[in-house]
Length: 62
Image (cartoon, rainbow, N blue to C red; front, side, top):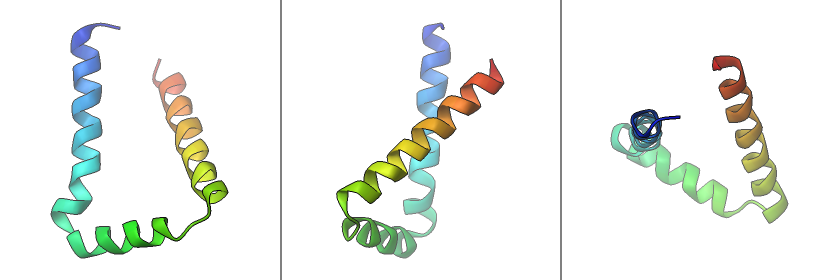
C-alpha cells in the first residue's frame, strides 16, 4: 500500500469522524455522554464490532 493510499484513507477517516460534530454538535454531545455511561465491556464490544466491520470492508474491497 502506497503512502498516497494511506493518506487518502486517513483523510476519509477524518472526514467521517468530523462530520457529525460539525453538522450536529448537540447530537454528538448526547452520543458522547451516552458512551461515557457504558460499561467497559460494552465499549470493547462496540470497538470489536467496528474493527471487524472495517476488516470485512477492506477484504471485500481488495
